[in-house]
Length: 155
Image (cartoon, rainbow, N blue to C red; front, top):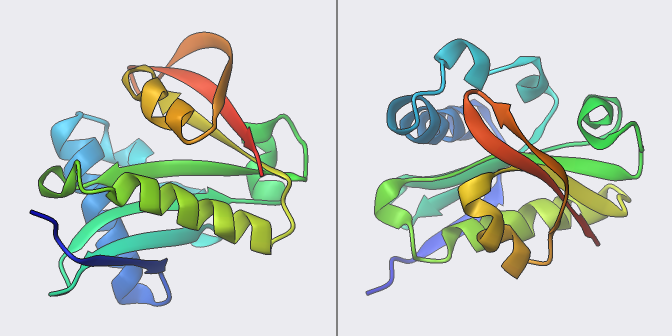
């Protein structure tokens, strides 16, 4: 059974709050990431994407950092964006929401003239991103107490 949903850029305060609610559910509640590090100064300037069920229930989110905001995460290359905070609500997993969110973030990156997208993948999710064309580089490292690897996809 599939659940109809749409993916869009978060346009207003209500959309952003929906994004933050999904992030809280997935990262803070499920994964135990401290709330004080889940939300950061980058949220204000980021492009947030939101997946919403047809009845308005938020199903997933992710964000794109670009320009100066992405520099610390991408090795300083201004042509590379940073995909992050990708989260899909438990009830929406397996419906293609994560893939749709990644593709929407990539489209937002292209629209801003970026040549590639980097991300910090939780190590258990490497296969998901590899199927979408991302390649891991560098060693595994902890972020918020969870093993991660850096990955990149050229657009």
